[in-house]
Length: 275
Image (cartoon, rainbow, N blue to C red):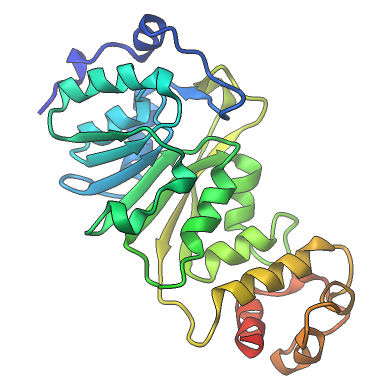
């Protein structure tokens, strides 16, 4: 087992390799080891578990996952970070695998042949797209056992929001109809280098059984129509989705309701009828 005291400080690693956070890649480096260890604890005991990480950067969260005993597969698009990750590999032999690729192009079913966790400080510019991709599989349950993901706090609150709140929307429904979802912890902007303009938060999602008879593509399309005009009544926002307005009454939804007042279960039931 690697002794954490043997690992160079993350600031030293960043300086050694001349790394700066790229706005284009949505990077913000998290350097507080105590905080990183807390994030690695969110999914539970990771000893001997397979973990997929997106955008490790200089390897702060990667270190915490490796110290927790995880077998980590990290995908890093920024080639500048690869030498720092290679050094980390020397401290944790046969425990870290790094792929130089765009995470949006990775097929996780081909990458892993056994269950795994996804733990990541997601790049801000692709975070929501990756989450929707992982949640939109045609087959369910997925091969991943949990998602522990950092987003801008505003996005994290949308993922975990309840119906009736201002944050509730399409992302809430697409997350909660298939997963137990919670906001696990908030992360102050000052914890990052450089500090972003917004606060961040960690969400934790665990897959549950999918309701029978619901086509994921139909639910996606339904929520897209409903929340594209969230201040309008459903009879207006759903009028171009065949059969949707006519089906509202059957699931106890009034045409005059606005989408943020409709529960996840009601959206799922409406999607079942349209499926």
